[in-house]
Length: 410
Image (tube, rainbow, N blue to C red; front, side, top):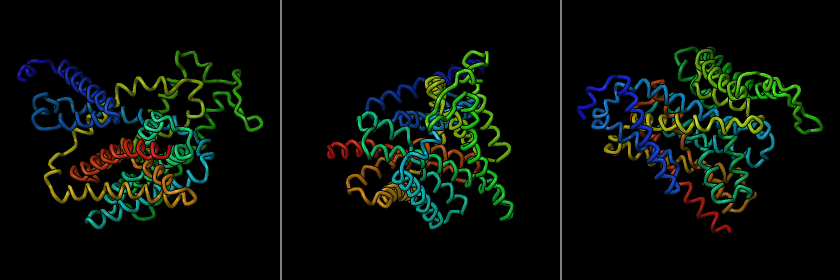
């Protein structure tokens, strides 16, 4: 591909983005047709483009910074949408079983990951990041499978979705603590505790107060336990700018992402997730999810391709790392199954298994945590690749198993 040498830098970057986006979408479509998450196809495209031949042939080193920016924006908007789908009021209504499954589904995988990495010879910071990558369930993947099967109204599906929401929130809090620890591990214990407390207070305060502020601005009032909209008090609708709610949501998404990074030394995605939760109660009225999805459709493939480009396939030639992938994956699955079994003791064994399998996919969540650890230079390229493979395998395992378990149930 010597002809690329004559292309101007700007035109070269546009050509590279075109190629990346085109092949990511083609791969995503193929995996959709195979009834698998499209992110797997996009990751594979990234892994292929990250090999020495394609990386050199397409001169991708010239656009790595731009790809990284697009990737960061993609994951920020992804977490914003996940936040939009996580109402604080829903957390209070998901029920005892969902809360218990969600909490235990965090505790067991986190514990397994930390113990494994400490036994493997990793530092506490490395062990904490690997454990965190095993924590949160990919609510998007699980919801997609359950919706396609038409079982969203079943008791098991409701518990899975409620627990997955709890998982996401707790996963963000765990990531907050771990990021604070990893970034400030050179401080004294007192200073470290202060950093972590500040971060957790920031997360909880925005979760609780942020939604109240947005609902007040939107003119929502609670009368006799019901949410009622007073259009005359809707200050957001009075803003003259076209698509004012959407613009305000974007401003808060980017603003809180920056605040999380600069003032609390957290990952930007935590700020984006919290911004989404602030608008979750009014998302339907303003159609925020529908307006965000086109941006997500454009930016998110760059995130998964960029992540895939960081994967080192040479780990598959290292017997020890292959063993680590297998053990990590087994523990990731076992952690969710055990958490679900312990948390749903009153249900029968098949129901417990359905809920446990529904909690297994790590998908984009595990990948995001791994990318944060890599960006902070806490985990190595090899360990990063191990976590990516664990996330891919757990994501591929869950859909066919869920379909089989629900078909036997019916």
